[in-house]
Structures are given as C-alpha cells and as structure tokens.
Image (cartoon, rainbow over all chains, first blue to last red; front, side, top):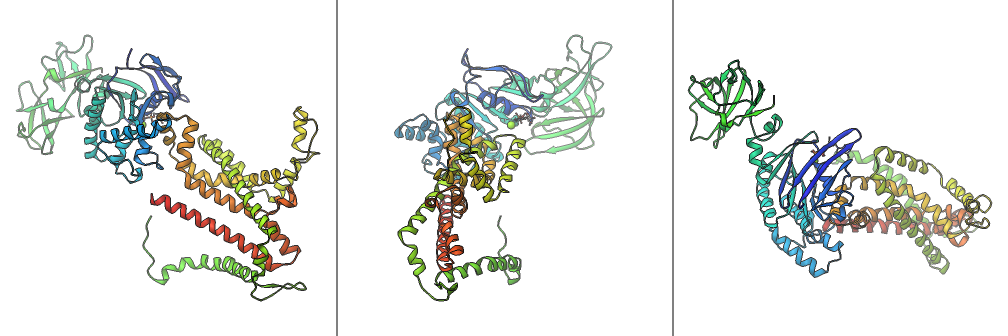
Length: 345
Length: 284
Ligand SMILES: Nc1ncnc2c1ncn2[C@@H]1O[C@H](COP(=O)(O)OP(=O)(O)O)[C@@H](O)[C@H]1O
Ligand SMILES: [Mg+2]
C-alpha cells in the first residue's frame, strides 16, 4: 500500500510509555498534523518515523516497505527541527545543497537545485548569505528548502513555526500548505496549536498521553469530537451535562431539549456545543434561562458569557447578529439539537 | 551582555587588586627576565648589567635552531595527538548519560593531580624491558621476548599526550556539551552517516574551539621539560630542557633568559593568531 503506515508503535522510556500503541495510516500526499498538549509524545512519534528514536515495539512501513530497521540516513526523508538546526558554518546555499553534496552531486547540479529551491521559498539570490544573518522567517524557509533538496518521500516538521511571531506564523502556515499541495508530498507536522492544524491539515491527529484520541479531517474533528478532551482541545466549546428524564426526554441543565436523542442505554452524558451554535434570545418557552455575566466585544466577534444553573455557557456572534444584551440581563439560551454532540459520560 | 562604560576613576577601583597582582607577579618578573636576557654573563659570578645581543645571536646557531625546531615539532604533534584523541572522545562522552559523564570527568580530573614526575616514572616503568607492557604481550604470545620501549621519541610523545589529554578534554567539554544535538540529527536526515555527520557538521561547527584547543595544548607542551628527559634521549630534549640546563647547571642566566623570552614570544604570537582566527569567524 502506498503511503505511511504506523503499526502499533510503542516507545517506552523506562516504564513510561511516551507513545502508546499508536496505529495510523497516512495515504500518499496527505498533510497530517499531529496535535496535542506538550509532553503527549508528538515529537517522540515523529522521531521514530525519522529513525532518530527506536520504537520499543511496532513497525513503521513506508510504501509497503518496513523501514523500522533502516538507519535515518537511508530513509529518504526531509525533516525540519524545532531548533531548525541550520549548519552555522555554511552559507544558505551550502546548507540547502548539503544533502546533494553528501551524495556526490556535481557543482552545477547542486547550484541548479539550490536556485530552484530558493525560488520555491521566495528567497532568490540568497545562496551566498551566511545563515546567521537571516531573519526568523527566512531561516525557517531555508530549513524547509534544505529538507526538500532531495525530493524526499516524507516531509517531517516538528513545531516548525513556533519560534515565529503570530502574524508571520499565520502567513507561513498558508505558505507551507500551498507548498505541500504543489509538491504533493506526504507531510507530517507536529504542533500544539489547533488553529495551525485546522489551517494546514487534511488529517488532524489529536494525541493525549501517548495515544491517538481521534484522527479525522479538521472539520470533522471540530464538528464531531470523539471525546471531551478533543472537544475541549480543539477550539472553544461548551461542555454541558445531559440527562434522560423519566419520560425519556433529554434534558440539559434541567431544560428539555426536543429532538436531541441520547444513544441507547445512556442516561447521563456530556454534550459539546460550539459557542457559535448557541443562540441567545428572550427568556421563556423551551429556552434555558440564564443571566449574562460578561460580554467580550472583540470588534469582529462578540463573546457573551451566560450563567445558567451554576454553569457558564459561552455564545459567540458577529456584530450583525449581535444579541441586544448587557451584563445582568436575563436571556433565553437555545441549543439547536443538530449542533449538540453527545460524548461518553 | 553590554554594560555601561566606566565613567569616573572610581569605577575602575575593582580593577586595582587584579592589576596590582598582574604587575607584581607578571610584569615585574617578565621585565626583569627581558633585561637579564641582554646582560653579559660573568663566568666567575652571575651576570653583569650591560646591553649585548650575544645571547640572542648565540641562539641562532645550528644546534639551538635544531632544538627549537624539534620543540615546536614535538609540541605540534602533541597538540594534534591530543585533539585527535580528545575531540571524538569528548563528543562521545557528551552523548552519554549525566552519571557516565561525571564519572569520566572525575577520573580525568584525578589525572591532573598527578605531578609530571609521577607521570614520567609511571610511563618509564610501563615502557621498560623488565616490568613494561611488552611483558604482557609476551605472555599472550604476541612477542618473543620483552623489549625496552624507551628512551624513544614515541615514549616522549606518549607521555606528553597522556599529560595534556585531561586539559584537552576539559577545554573541549563545555563547547561540545552546548552543541545542539539536532545538528547531527539534521545531517543524518539529509543522508549523512553518523561518522560523516561528525566530520561534516560537528568538527566544522566547532572550528574555533578546536583551533583554540590546539594552541593551548601546543603552548602547554612547549613548556614541558621533565618528560623528554625521563622518556627520551638527549636529542629529544626540548628548548625548555636547555633553558633549565643553562639557568641551573651552567649558571648562564642571560642566555637562559634570552631563550625563555623567545619561547614566550612564540606563545604570544600564537595567542594573537587565535584572536585573529576568531575575529575572522565572527566577521562572517
Ligand atoms: N529521551 C527521553 N528520555 C526520557 N523521557 C523522554 C525522552 N524523550 C521524551 N521523553 C518523555 O516522553 C514524553 C513525550 O515527549 P515528547 O514526544 O517530546 O512530547 P511532545 O513533543 O508531545 O511535547 C514526555 O513526557 C517526555 O518527558
Ligand atoms: Mg515536542
């Protein structure tokens, strides 16, 4: 099968499993984001794919070939490190040409490829510059170009944008995604920034405590989180307790939500609903009654915090659909059943 | 870190004590030595104040020229030997766990507590015919009969490399510990075997450190005067041996001083060279 298969890979440091029985199929040409909080084993998993760390058990299979026993330098991959790891004693051009030089490519060949790659990363004419004189964003691009010099089968990046400021980071996310689509290269990016993952990925893999919690396209992860951890980690969400009453109706915070069905046999569960799906209106009717505790007007969006039955619910709206409320006002909260995701209790 | 420049005389007071020490223990003795190097030797006494350049002229003879050349060559070989052994060793050491590193460093530091005399006699025993390492080789059947490995040039070189190696490792260690380990890993993902990555990335990235270490060991070896006498023949004696000989046994202070001044000048020239190399590197 073409693409990357991670087969039941486990990595233990002593008794501690940094990566715990991870199973993942990455079809050829897919952009994957490994997403999770710090210390959940993302880097360790990436390093095992690169061969820089040896799995305790399991196998890494690339295009049908088991590459687990192959040393790093025989794996034909490009990797961008969190520290970038540009060679300080070499110029931009020599950094990019390093992999070609190792393989004994001719000077002309090296120069041609370096020029090609410098154009690709929008830094033409930078070949002779020392890497120590580049800005953060430029160093980032050079590290990417260096990793791509040999047109590798697999492109691995460990938190590549974390050192950049917010604005540049967003621009680089778009650029990286466009670059990947142009080259059609299988790419795995480690990040702890869910926005970054949503921007770039075909497939978002959410990890926690060394395990994969959910692997799905970004929108599915956002709309249908597998559990409370994923729902909470991806974007902002309201996690509300739901119960089935004696009449078989589902209630949230003591109010019946018509049309929301709980899975068979479940009487208590958590329900996740995104702030933009929460509607605020006049109290009464089938709405949950609450009082506004805080309004955060960000210009582009307005976040309204509502206290209801001892729980805070966040609702987000655009200024156009601005709810006419102020702190202390009584409001009715409507939760559309189609936007509610029932999670295990 | 950038600090405010000192503005008044009072700002310089912290420098007073080190300055005084430098004058008393370095500038004064060294000036005296320079002065003495131009004095005239008095065979019946010590020396008489004068200004002659005989001492330096005598130094330009074929014999002393040869000794100087040998000393420089020996020091260069010791420096190269130490860095060739010490650099890969220290690199591998920094990849080990903290505990292993500490154990090795403590071991190396304890070698520093040995005096040159002890090192010399230990090696002279190890290289001797009666009790030396060749006896071991005979026991395991690699040699027919034990031989004496000294006095030889090899013995001098071995002893001096042994003596300078702990310093080499201690100078290289901080730089190698601080070296970003992902540099080598990056080279490996780009297709370099670990050995290639070491020569392509680790060594060039630490060129300054290596040059500085080479010069430090070189200067250190230039001053060695006991080991060549214990482990070598007279033709393996260094300039430092001759300086000792002239100063103590021949009572020719002016000539000894002239040779010592010359040795110091060479050392200074090398320190200057290090600074120059460093400047060029920074300018890149
Ligand atoms: N070489 C190592 N020795 C011991 N523990 C390690 C080692 N590398 C990583 N770990 C541990 O494994 C866990 C996962 O680390 P890592 O993969 O770096 O997390 P992430 O990249 O998701 O922040 C962490 O708890 C870390 O302390
Ligand atoms: Mg990490």
